[in-house]
Amino acid sequence: MTDRTGGPRRTVITAAALAEPAASLSGYTIGVTADRRRDELATLLEGRGARVVLAPALRIVPIADDAELRAATRACLDAPPDIVLVNTGIGMRGWLEAAEGWGLAEPLRAVLSHAYLVARGPKARAAVRSAGLHDQWSPEGESYDEVVDHLKARGIAGLTVAMQLHGESQPEYTEALEQAGARVIEVPVYRWAAPTDPAPLHRLVDLITARLVDAVTFTAAPAVQALLRAAGPSSDAVLDALRGDVLAACVGPVTAAPLRRHNVPVVAPTRARLSALVRTIVDELPKRAVSLEVAGHSLTLRGHAAIVDGELRPLAPAPMAVLRALAATPGRVLSRAALLHALPRGADEHAVEMAVARLRAGLNAPGVIQTVVKRGYRLPV
Image 1 (cartoon, rainbow, N blue to C red):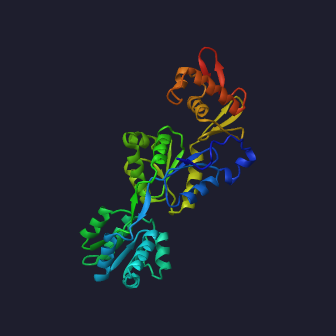
Image 2: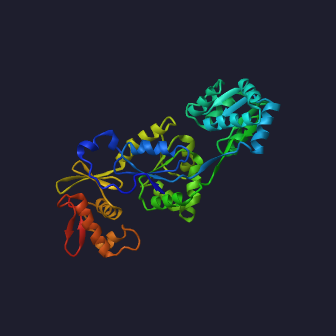
Image 3: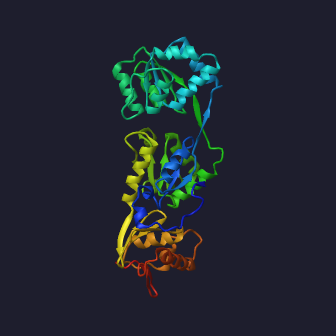
């Protein structure tokens, strides 16, 4: 795990500063599973005040020297495809670069210029046009299903379709095209591989199951399965967290599909852009915050902080866990034994007292945490 903030923030953010867009995600911790554009996404999130945990789930491995890519390229030259599906910008650029290395760039470009080019999204379209080619159609929702429906509606019986793969084979879509009568050439330009250092991803699994991150971002569908594989026996616990306390935020519908198959509610922007993904998170996370009026104070709980009378006050995990437990049933007295269950494993009742003391100091709001003698603690409402 890489914490881009360099450690927990303890600086109080005033009401005036909190009202600024740059603080819209202050108090929240967000996991980033992307690899190639992780720094860009992290910078966007940090620009809104979030604490970012970098944990790449996968990495892209180019296969420019791979025999499969060369064979697929030769197949396209020997029997030029009628339709070419460009799935990703990096894939299109990588294909042409590999062909350049083999001395086949111009023949390939000539074949592509005569094909019906489908660009699945804006990055694919940009790569096509930067290569001096012209795309004829793009799906509005950037999904494979739309592409298959469009091609079947046009009629593809007896035609050849070259499909640049998105990291790995999509057999369900290849089969759908073949069942409609097409011959499909799969073009593997790169593959997904495990991260060089798996430790950050395993740490992110622990943070998700402990509800110590507020959201996890996904920018590629294979990253979902990679996260669950890393979780191993804890995969059900990860899914439970994503179904409730931890927001799953995906860059688009294709990325969201594996999570939805696991009945995980997902938020995604209407257009697959990192900036749009961040705006979606900005819109969604504050809606999930718990707000209360306690002892004459306004109290709102964010991920690792509380907003007290308009000022954001960061808290350590143990005091924050106590506050969440008390806020779940305001007015109800919770014993030390009950609060012990909210703390990390291995804690004792003395740790509860320490967490309460640190919580009171962190909130700096007299009367918010009330001691009920010989019974426990509560939020008076």
